[in-house]
Length: 326
Ligand SMILES: *[C@@H]1O[C@H](CO)[C@@H](O)[C@H](O)[C@H]1NC(C)=O
Ligand SMILES: *[C@@H]1O[C@H](CO)[C@@H](O)[C@H](O)[C@H]1NC(C)=O
Ligand SMILES: *[C@@H]1O[C@H](CO)[C@@H](O)[C@H](O)[C@H]1NC(C)=O
Ligand SMILES: *[C@@H]1O[C@H](CO)[C@@H](O)[C@H](O)[C@H]1NC(C)=O
Ligand SMILES: *[C@@H]1O[C@H](CO)[C@@H](O)[C@H](O)[C@H]1NC(C)=O
Image 1 (tube, rainbow, N blue to C red):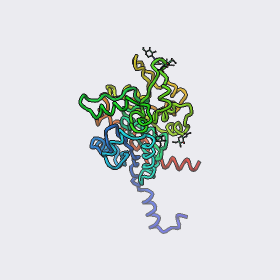
Image 2: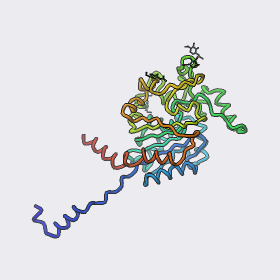
Image 3: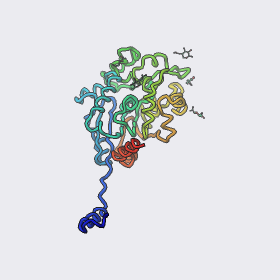
Image 4: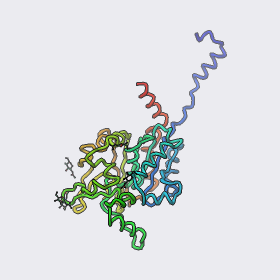
């Protein structure tokens, strides 16, 4: 019935239909960043990483994960605290956040221990859902040695002394963070020790190493679009550095058993095999010592993994709509 409309209306209609409407640039997904041991969420170095993410993908909303609004307390929580409670507190913060809670998906970047904690967030909560998780120098398969202190760093020495003295004690497991991702194996069999399996307050659980596996952990981790793990080639802080790829290292011979040769993968305890089989698991390395990151590496990561072309606010909402209609 178009021909019955007045000519002016027809002309207007035609011009509206003919003018290509400027399609708004797709909105980048928010980015979660979780810092490492001894750092805090407000530190300049960390902020410059977030600023770079925004330079590369304009409009990115960056959220710096914190255990406390006070930077000093947030830093102290990287050393002291029960990881079960810390991760639950992050889950509650993110689920209640005015912007993040409305996002159809987010990306996540974890530095050092922040990497395995973000993975735990995915496994246990994943609200908002993480699309791409990138970790740098993380301790996914735990550590077999505590970090060595500088010669005159007495505070560090006292702290490490406490860790060493009683790693499997209930107090240490409930209060000292690195003890909760320490992993002890039997030198002959390579199997995790009974003490580790019984007492580890974090790692044995999130890696589903105990007899009873948590199916939610596997389902959530396997739901990632991509999980990218970077190891620092000259890392001497994380022992063994291959932990960043979930590899197991024989501490006396130095022999590395890669993830794909381990039971956690072959029996797919946490969804890593499923990710790998859909081409979503990446093992990357970068030059340098622990956390010596330059802007070039980060820029590549932001372009390759966090750009709106990989997943944007609109594309995910459309996907969700499509699923509802099915
Ligand atoms: C598995 O993990 C989910 C998410 O953290 C939790 O709600 C659930 O209670 C766990 N199940 C078991 C059997 O521990
Ligand atoms: C850590 O906190 C959780 C939750 O409050 C608690 O169930 C668990 O026993 C604590 N861990 C240790 C080693 O005390
Ligand atoms: C390591 O495993 C072997 C073989 O099962 C066992 O004989 C030995 O006692 C274990 N060592 C320790 C320290 O548990
Ligand atoms: C680790 O290496 C040592 C020394 O080469 C060897 O005796 C031991 O059997 C190895 N352990 C495992 C679990 O392969
Ligand atoms: C890993 O498994 C493959 C295939 O089963 C085998 O060929 C390879 O030697 C193993 N590598 C290591 C380091 O154990």
